[in-house]
Image (cartoon, rainbow, N blue to C red):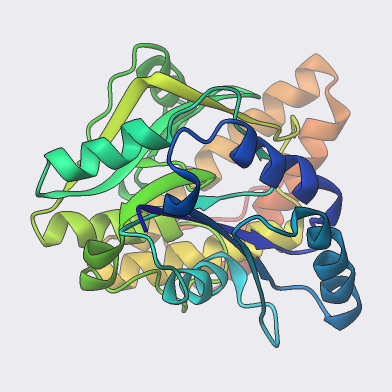
Length: 298
């Protein structure tokens, strides 16, 4: 088996049919060299509905796995990859749509490069960001600009950027050699973490701009308070794991949020101001008792 595509779902039934269909519509590998594994993180009733939906792909190489609880992005994908037969595995979000063949190119890249462990293609959708700055390179006000310019110019360096986990390929053996996804991270920074460990083992990470896929991600102003707490949890764990200065990064985040809040207020962008204010409150609550962060009500 050449390729296994893993799709983790959490109440993603409405998006799943078109996602899976696009995989088969644009598959350029022999039929017996591709399999799709859907991993359901949702409760039992939703899982049963998902299983029923996948019946329409009877006769196609589609497997279904249900986790007994929501194991997040990393845990869900690990469960699928453990059941995978492909030498190469692709991790795909349910809101990804293929619009041209690219599986054959991905498999050929891994076959031709002995050290290649992780591969990404060009993402089209929302801001068309295919890779992001690693958390340790959080530059206030400049971060988003640097990411957009680097993506527009297709300048990728795995020392500074990590590939989007919305759709990314791994050499399965090297993925497990690097430890797989760290299941202590429930949400956010899983890609930065696995990329860090891949590089530690002297494996390579590659981005190819000549092949693309669609990401139907909605435009959003910012994180919800709950999502932002998850982000900070992951940041704390990541920094402790790799000995980065979490306090410095949180200070930079706080500076950026305060600046954006003031700009949003001047421009009358009420929703953005509310999001920035929520982020500030979460950051200050998380940092209570930390002397380097000072309360500012402005």
